[in-house]
Amino acid sequence: DSMSLLHFLHSNKETLDCQVVAITVDHMLRGESSLGDANFVKSWCKENGIYCHKYSVDAAKIATERRVGVEQGAREARYGVFEHLIKENIVDKIALAHHISDQAETILMHLLRGAGLNGAGGMEPIRDGVYIRPFLNIGKDDIVRYASMNYIEYVEDETNAESKYNRNFLRNVIMPQLKQRWEGVEQNLINFAESCREDNDFILSYVQHGGTIREKNFVKIPLVYFHYHSSVINRILFECLDSLNTAKDIERKHIELVKELALNDNGKKINLPNGIKKKKEYDYIT
Image (cartoon, rainbow, N blue to C red; front, side, top):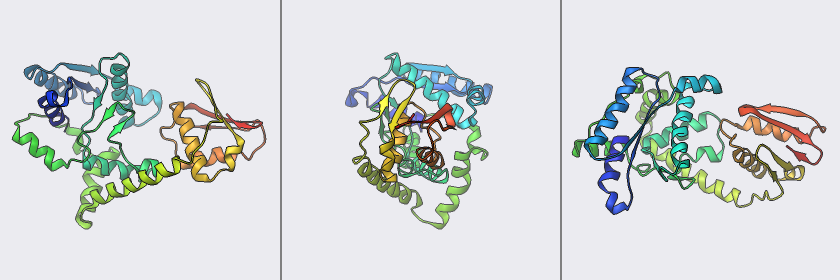
């Protein structure tokens, strides 16, 4: 998928009026094999006149330090590389090769983890004006066909066949069975996600949070907000957590704990994932 996207962007760079560079990340999870994959990308780029940024990151170490799974550790390591390149003004957009099947898997995974409307909406074609997904509405078969027609070489990560990781389990075990029983299941999930995004956007239009007090490491939310409809206060809380870069892995049960805190006596504290500490202080939840 990524090699096809790289080829497509490079082949159409004049039409798209952009410069294209490649980023390849060795997560150091498969020894010489993953290093070989990164070197393959670098060699292909050299042959095709594309500058390639190659990085090695210890995803397992990051996962251990942050107490997350290896999948999440690898993702955080990879996005850390992306954010560095953006911050240093080396790139201004990151193109990711997610496609229809990836989107369907993401939606289902979010639902199984207890996501609300926001999570059920799946991945966005453009996120934060930086991350773009040109293939998000393209089927896997079309991408494979494109690679074949253009003689695009690629390597397959051998761990893709292992179902011990959650996404691989969905991809290799669950989705094939769903497709056998329900025709068009992927598109149905994507249609559902679109409805969720529309409904979520409508609710967000009613969210007013100008009274929150924000500093670098904390947010103070007026207690009066906790009298709003649950749909509104839930989104205020998520938005505040997101402003502190701590919204990842926050589930409905955590939001309910915060709402209960608003009913308790002053000084009451609770701890949430990602090092978040919540405290009731007079007219605010901090």
